[in-house]
Picture 1 (cartoon, helix red, strand yellow):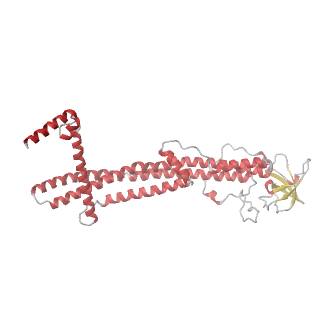
Picture 2: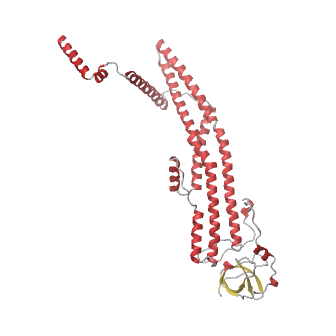
Length: 405
């Protein structure tokens, strides 16, 4: 055996001289980084042992074969409150996003832009798009025709409604959606991380308790007691950190309450603006509702009303700043029908398209398909004419008439 060992040693010596670095690593000779590799292997083995110990403890708890350290009632209430806050915040956030943007494809696109930290491209609202179509249709039909003029007025109102909607969406996103997202992506992630650490500390603590019960020898008991004290300290420290974070949920509720008030204010302003815009449109169209209600066989609009809907009592109307009195309205208000005479330019015949109920004594009630005589007076609103039927005389809305001559 001696000569064989000698030949092996001489062969290894020659190989080392040819490949010094590689053979030093594999033959056990010192090499750069070897100590670090050994440390990493020891740490990996230690982590694997801790993971295995936690897995055994968790499995035995599920099977009812091991005791589990229970948290106090106050801590459990904090956990339940935090979970409840997270779940409802997610639902409210999602449904608010649906309210502001019903199109799911657009929501996904905006989500991707946000994650890529890029600016979301500006889009026209549905109201603004409808306004564009109405204006283009009015230009094709003729802006001087009754239908064309009405399309222009309704289109302008739809544009204002679209602008109000855009402002509402922007305000709601900044003042309401962003704080909810910040909670879920910031505070809640921190709470979840600390809760996972606390659960691991609890499993370590209970595993140490189980090892202490199984220890028989005095040396094993002493080692188990030391490990138990360390695990108990780590658990208590982590429980206090998690408790402080959970108690901060109350501050989160206060912040979300303030954001909710701002959301309600934005929504109230939006609906109040829309209500005011529609009231202005009704006045421009002759104080009758602009949407005709009924089945396909009926073309009669609902009776005109002089009082605003009952929702006016609950929706504040945004004041209009700097609105000057309409000269045509002043002329009509001072109109004395008994003194009105047809102009020198003559009169025209018109056929009534829909029934119309007079709003006051200065207006003339109309019946569909009847023929009346109409003419205009200087200073009158262009949407109104003076109508005569026999001895009866009064103002009539142009949109209810078909001018024949």
